[in-house]
Image (cartoon, rainbow, N blue to C red; front, top):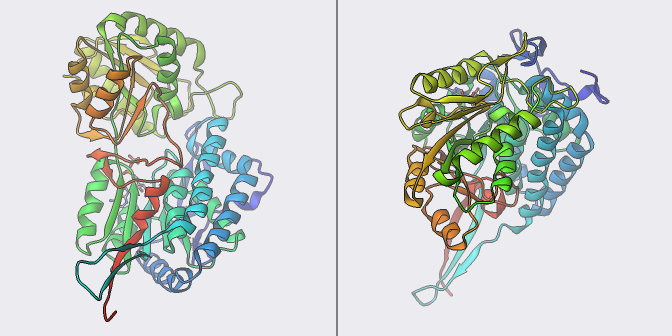
Length: 482
Ligand code: ADP
């Protein structure tokens, strides 16, 4: 990996403004060829405690800065991330596998949260409320919650960190990030840039090591007042339970199983463009990727045919560094095995493969973009999140049936549908039990919008004016003697 600024590739943890190594280290692999990218320290309970103490001390000063001062630090961090976007993208593609163009897109998308919350920092408004008794006033103050922990996944190694850390820092909180073991270098590069931005020591920390051990210390600590987690639903449930001991505030962004409904009256060509974008971005490894195409019978054959043409024409599997490639590897062998298992199960129960269906290449964890038709609700893929490049097509007759199929999931993160009927657009959008609904679009993430899910997909929202509330406490001050 050739970087313009090699110092962005850090192989140490960043705690209390210092770079820290350890005797033991963890290897990080490149999923495109399984080569070793580098190593990071394997820090444990004691170092996590140190990070918590450092964050607690830093909170005293950081929370007392003016919002404008914190905003200035965030703006500097934002500018540095944008300035180094090419190097950050290279680091990401090397450890995560996504195409370089997508990696740079993620760096800028992640940076947009830093910019957004640099602005929002100055707009944390309280309230005054008319009192029902004479001689008293009700005043509502918003205060930073305290030391926050962020546990983040590998599919968006940069944006999932900025989406949590920037509202926290803007609000006046301090943060300890535990990135995914597969993608720590993007996190450490962000720490290097936070350091260069002059963010004071202890305010932003990154620790690597065994997830369970670090997670146990973070969740059981009395000092840590908030956990923000993005990852799988089973782990999220465990962390939520662990946080109950200290009654911590939690934000959870968990699994999804996004339906993508195509009605008979849809603009099919527009639906195809967004179906490809929604399904195959990051090789299907996003929690908002379309996971079920629910297609009305009048356009089922046409949609299947056009989607197959588009996939065969547009998608190219290969290393994220190769020009013209847009389907990188899956993150590891387990991810490939899960995808294979879902396809095998579906085919055994009667589904047909219109495209792909198998591994690709001699090394790395590549998988062909796949389309399955005649998929039914008894198949694993109808219920389990796929996290891979497989588009299963279900058929339905009536609007209510399509909506019921879409809602038949433990998850409630993102849903999409295509229709040109105005009344139907409102009816269906309101009937879908999902935190985010794309109407005639398959791509909806934006720093200005509230991202998050219902049901087993999580608690809380990230981004937008709502995102900063997750890091604030409401204090009611009753002023008497007036
Ligand atoms: P994924 O399937 O995307 O890897 P995980 O939920 O396993 O999702 O991982 C998301 C994040 O949670 C990663 O940073 C991982 O290291 C961390 N993690 C996994 N298990 C635990 C745990 N028991 N305690 C704390 N963190 C964990």
